[in-house]
Length: 65
Image (cartoon, rainbow, N blue to C red; front, top):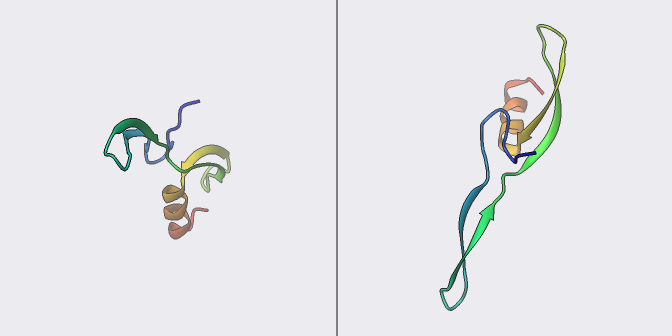
């Protein structure tokens, strides 16, 4: 399964590890993802989504979670 937030679209990004001697090697920045069950208030259907921490925080602020 790919590491992508199903709400915001955040995905893995790439960059460099930089050592003390400034040698660069490739690395990956992984998004902070969690599985969450969200109930749709209109239909009552429960959806299981893989969401980033920022998306969960936004949903809690809006009162959805």
